[in-house]
Length: 251
Ligand code: ADE
Image (tube, rainbow, N blue to C red):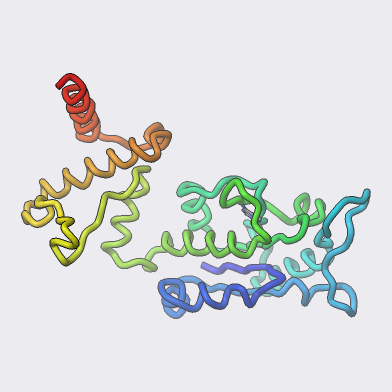
C-alpha cells in the first residue's frame, strides 16, 4: 500500500515512522510512505503557502495552488489520479475501526494535513474525496491525525502484524474492549494473577476472557454494546452477570 502525505512539516513524521512496527512494515515493503512538502509547490519565491481569508477574520488559509500542485505531482508519479484524497480536519468523518478497515483496503491513499484556519474551500470541492477527524477536539495541525491514520491502517494491512496478533485484531473488530492481560510475576505487591489463567484449561480461559471483555465494555463503554457482534454464548454470559448482580442486591 502506498500512502502519500502532504504536509508543511515533514520532519514531524521522522520519529513515529522510523521505529517499531511502522519501520518494519516499510522495510518489508508492506507499506510505502512518501512525505511531500507542500511548500515545494508554493507559487512564489518566498515559498509561502497561506494567505489571509477573503472577507476578513483571524488566521490564515492554505492557498489552493500548492495543494493542487502537490496532488498533480502525485498523479504524475503514480501514473493515475488518486482514488482517495483524505483531508485531516476536525469536521471530518470520525475515525473508527470501520473507516480504518475501509481505508486499509485501498492500494493508494493521499493524506492532506491541514493547518492554520484550514484549506481553501476549492481544495475540498475539487481535490478531496474524504474528510477524516480523529476526535472532537482541535489540534494544531493534521500531522498527528495523519500519523494516527497511518498507524491504524498499517496494523490492518496483511502481514504487518504477526499471525497471532492479527487474529486478536479480528476479535477486537467484534466491537468489544480487550480483556485484561497479565505476565510474570504471578504475585506483585500483593496483587495476584487470576487462578484461571494459570490453570492451563484453554476453554475456561477463553470463557473468562470473553466475560471480562463483555464486563469491561458494559462498564466503560456501554454504548459500544449496541454495535457489538454478540453470539448466543455472549448473551448467556450477560444474562448470568445480570442475575448475579440481582442476587447481590437482594442479599
Ligand atoms: N486537525 C486538527 N484537529 C483535527 C482532528 N481532531 N482530526 C483531524 N484533523 C485535525
